[in-house]
Amino acid sequence: MLSSTPRNESTSHYESPGISDGSQSMHLMIHLIVKHPTLTTDCSLEKDCTIERSLHPIMKRGFLNTKRAKRSVEIRGPDTPVEPVPIKMKLPIGKVDTTLPEGYVPSEAIVKEYDSSTTVYPDNACICTTLPSRSFGDTLADNPDNWTECLFLGGKQKREIVSTPGFPSPVPRPPQVRHRIGPSRFGIGMFATRNIKMGDLIVSERPLLVSPIAVPPLPLNLPISFEPTLLQIMQARMVEHEKRLENCLGRMLPENRAAFLALHNSHTEDGSGPIFGRIRTNGIGIIEKTKKSDLDAGDYGYTAVFDAISRINHSCAPNAAYGFTMASFSSQLRAIRDIKKDEEIFIAYCSTSEPTAERQASLKPYGFECTCSLCSDPTSDALLAKIKESTLEPSVWSYNRDPKGNIDRTQHSKDWMATIEASGQQGLKEYGTHISMLIAASAGLGRMGEYRKYKEMSEAWYLGRKSSM
Image (cartoon, rainbow, N blue to C red):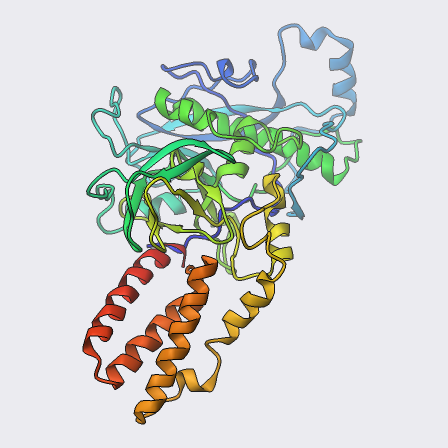
């Protein structure tokens, strides 16, 4: 199972111009969904395609005869792309000036089709592909496990995925339906349809869309005499990236496209666009970028948007965690503590081991202020610090043949487990540490009934929590 980062409303990105695109698919013209009527591409749904870009802008009929065209020719530089310099900056959030650079015109898309079985593409190609691959006419009735539309930067990521042993494995399923989507005090959320035990699988599903977390640096089609601000560059690059994402949306099955567009968008005033805005709002990190990533080879982190899992609301004291399995190309949601029937299911959009102020700062891009039980309790930070210290005491770790030492260690861990459970923070690693201490102490005391009890608890806890590790 891949390490899964917190739900990634990414704040630090390489800003990028994208490649304009759209869809002239057999399903539905993409401009009927997203307002870019000038965009069309030809990319069959059963094939992969790469999207290259021309620095010639998209022009309406008769444009060359206008005064604006003559002025554009005068100020625009040669049609030779200049190698961009990566500038690391934060994506905008909230209400910002979305004015594009003067004279900027979106670049034109050049779409090339490839057989879906290929894994060899031009260097730095922007690839639209469906995983697992599907044939023309396939429906969800043929494959309830579904398909994922992916936007990859280069062929490296696709090669790694399709070479995963067992790919594509069936998506694992719980023995019965354990969740429902319905109205929540936070809008819409996920709820348990029955009592769920710690470690139980709640739901598993393939993403609707996978795309880069970062927006890669590519050249923009800007007038040579214009010196845009960093914000203007970012706005233009998000426009280009949005058009690139349109091609993926246009390839989706109608049911998947409707599910994606039904998701909330908390980025309606920062220039993200309706697709990228939903990705920023609902994306969950599934493939991490390492410190040694080769960005030129497309080694970016990737984020996924789901139909059901992306509906789950946040809590700093979550009762569930998710993780991504490459073989089945799906994410599994498991309980990290017992959940009662009709109880709302929560995951954490940020690290829960940080103090309240840091958690709130991480959640700011989502457009809400967390009011969970921990954020509403002014004493929660002090308790969190004590929980962390509770596993650092020498008496917890020291080996002691004296039965009294094991009795003291047992009581210490039982007390702290009760405290952690009362605050709903069973997802903290310290909770698992105390379970391990009870296993060791009960074995030392010869209490084999308790030993087996805590051994089973440990297995269930690690099964649930490893989803978020």
